[in-house]
Length: 348
Image 1: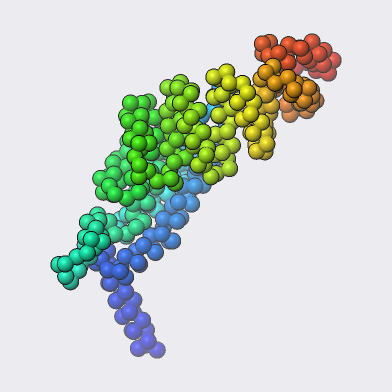
Image 2: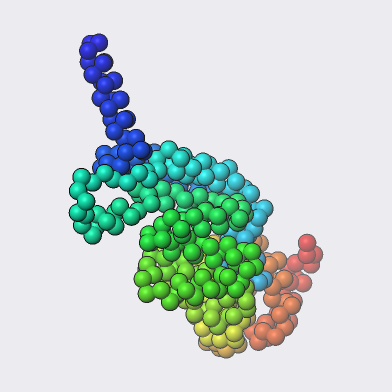
């Protein structure tokens, strides 16, 4: 039994020694990659996702204005995810500190193939270290620590110049500039990325949504519509698609493209959105009904139905009555007032 224990200890020491980050072998690379991915990075990524979900769930849309493309602009709300982001940073730092492999592999020949030369030129040999740096930057971004996030991104761009992750890093660098109102710098990055023929498809939605955010901040609504349409086309998340569709409806409405606005508000309603977004979509459809006479009857019916619903009664009144320019509202104004006076003599 003692001999078996000694043998087990011997092999454990042998494995740990061979897996040192000072050695660059297939075994050491595999060991540190597996430990980094499944034991550390995964937990950090899950923590980050929980923090983002917490922010998304707590975000309150202001439907009186054009919606924000992203929900990370509320500093107070971001603070609610502080512990999640700190945990993500802790996990990423652990991967970087204890599992980074920078030592060059020891080839026994000087005659290296092209792939071997390329491999030798790498600055990092654990495939999860660059991902950890990127997640570290994103977590600091959500903590509103843009300076620290930008330092990490600058490091990524320097250390991993040929890795596809550089595109993700540049997109987030543009977002840092946008949050800091550094529009010239953001536009330069976005324009360069858009013109890059090697730009990966998997980042297209992120690129064009960021470009649309820039356009909206600069009140370039036509360009914002074009870029957000591209972002929507390559988006995969259901809630992201819903948000972009609603914003596109608003953008068309701002540009007086009422038919397109109606089209997109109707798309929103069909996507089974949260109650508040459904309500506001229907309200906006009512406002646009003057150019869609076929829909007037059904929209009037919807408005009366919402007036009978305690959840929407006051909101309908507050939304509709001030908007005297709406054709359908002008026609309904007296009926609405009579309805309100007869059923709601006292408003809160």
